[in-house]
Length: 377
Image (tube, rainbow, N blue to C red; front, side, top):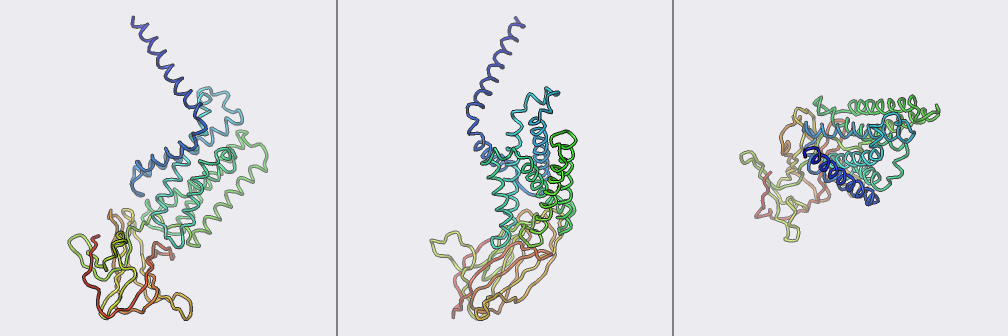
């Protein structure tokens, strides 16, 4: 009776497996869209903070799986898994696995890099990540191109090391970004060498072309960094605004601003800024930095000269921050003298790395704004 029960149970499990397999192949054409949303939703629930150990371990696992699936997919495409039936058994799922984890990495990077991006200057790199995320899902067939696969591997590994190294070492800098590029480039070159030795590629020209692509991507990303077009991860701007007043209430900043019209219910700062004699302009920033990271940041004020048609630097103040506060390091910089017109306040890290900015217009009035609304941060 026990033997018969086991046989029946095995038959039931086999039928269930065949149903799942049949369901997969029946709806395989929808797999790219489902993979896209599955990866994005998975990241939304599993990734929380850029310096959290669990999150970085998850991303490291994603990276290892992407590289593994790229290697296995190409070995299978050349018939090099024939002698390993255990790996060959799951060969049909390697491309889907590669696509899923590439999409997961790109979606995670979009979240992390977007949090560090300024809307005026370095959203280009975030746009590149978004494009790659969409391309992974839409152009599935093109992912069979070995050069494209390894170019994406280099991009995701460089992006990962670019924020991991500052977290581990407690500082930021161009040298760490270059080290991230060297690590990722060497990793991809080793894969190219393995493919050449294993017979995935057979001509010297293919190997040299692959290495040349690695060097080209390394140079391109380094150039984007120097041009301030890559967000300053792992720093993340939590809040920025211009206010009429500020004071510390316990562990919070109480920020005063002119009440917004009812149809601008989301506004919690002064834009435009109505300036009366005796007023002060208060720039407030809340900046998140990982635990242990030490960085020098500057607040810079600019005024737009309409006669010369250019931004004029007014003043700046430098401070050193130590990361670790969950809601961000907070700082105010106030001015008591001003001119009417367009103003911009920038928050920058060392090497002139733009973290964020506030643009607003100053309008002169005779009477101070009263009463003020207040925002706690």
